[in-house]
Image 1 (cartoon, helix red, strand yellow):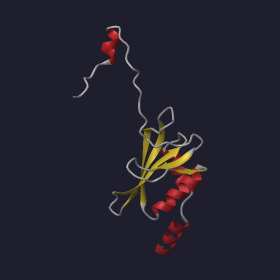
Image 2 (tube, rainbow, N blue to C red; image 1 turned 30 degrees about the vertical axis):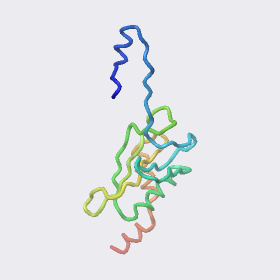
Image 3 (cartoon, rainbow, N blue to C red; image 1 turned 90 degrees about the horizontal axis):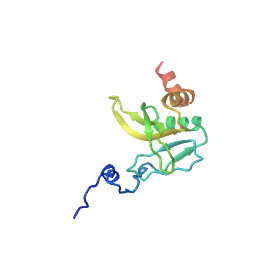
Image 4 (cartoon, helix red, strand yellow; image 1 turned 180 degrees about the horizontal axis):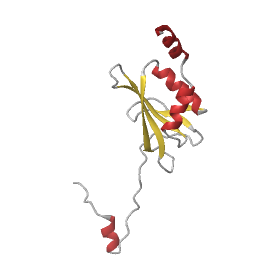
Length: 138
């Protein structure tokens, strides 16, 4: 038999106490000293990949994407286990030839920086392969 739903406000109005409501953290657990990381989706067995700085994270994303385009979407309320508050991050997808999302690379954790910081780092850390391909096309 299912347990009945009892509203905490109703209990309080009648002088009864209720257990405090705790919000469960659904994101992956991550060490507090990691400032930049690529977090996998919730339904994968992949591990969190931590990086020493934003440029190292950008170089990893550039290697993973190859010559595919990127779709970057800012996430305002990314939740990570063992962290007290939600933080900003960026959802990173590669695009196929039809500009549709192809592969999910992960959520970029940027030490509470947003999309603009990642875009600057990606421009600063472009792959050499990209430059060789544009030279051949010219």
